[in-house]
Amino acid sequence: MAFILRRPFAITATLRQTAAPKAQSITFRAFHNPPLKQHPNFFTPKTPAISTSRNVLKFRATFRRSYQQSAYNPVAQGDLRQRLIYGAGIFGATLLGINFIFNRETREDGGMPDFERRYLNDTFMHTGLGIGIIGLAARTLHMNGWSFRLMSANPWLVLGVGLVGSIGTMYGTMATRPENYVQKYGLWTAFNVTQALLLSPLFFMHPAILARAGLYTAGMMGSIAFVGATAKQEKYLYLGGPLLAGVAIVALSGLAPMVIPATAARTLMWTENIWLYGGLAVFGGFTLYDVQKVLRHARLAEQGLIPKDAVNESISLELDFLNIFIRMVQILAMSQNRRK
Image (cartoon, rainbow, N blue to C red; front, side, top):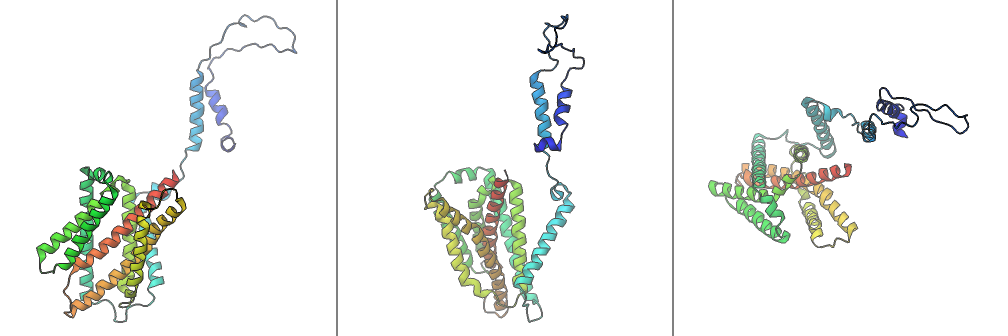
């Protein structure tokens, strides 16, 4: 009915197009009329000019044109400049909102000193370099078929080997002093490659989802890092204990599908929500905590109490980025599946 109201003449126009250009008339006899004279062509069979199958195809084409009209989306149909402006507006509004809510008390020392700024920039540089190594290595492994072999392996074996490799290389990197340049960067590279070995199956996802998840993760961490860098000294360092308890709950909820039977659908749904959205909150808090911890270590290093080690600081921020990115990918994939 909605189709007929929107296009009242679509059906009649389609049927009129299917009529023969020079169709001959046929005389019919009604029961209430008197007998007619016999027409010479009365019993001559008439062959339609166009077959019924073509009529059906044209009718379907008319119906399809009405229901496949896509809605206008200025962001999707605009050029690259419009998309960049749209994304920059969202990022700026998010940054201002988070700064207004969480950062009403700014620093009392007149701003960030130069040694803190240099140390923080060095940490962010190593974080970006580590994320780049993980991305390139994961892409290379995926193109060489590693993802298929990893998905077909025993999940408990993958979990055990992945934990041993990740934790071993991470603590090996942190235990190595910055003066031992070759060993430290070698272990740090091994840590990044280990993460790439575990995350390479993400490239089964659509590249647009991965790009959007990376953009959202960078925006979220950038805004939270700005709040942590401009807040009062050691304002959010008290979050270490609660965040550690939260990450334990999130980790247990992530392991729940390997233990809970598939018949407990409601329980699995709750554990998945805790792993997704609870994990976003927990690792967003860890980003805030880690940025303030980096600034505190910068002050201690300036006093000569600890050595400067931007590699160790970057590992924590890399783990925050990876955990937020994985959850962003899953949320975007789930929203895309619901729209289908």
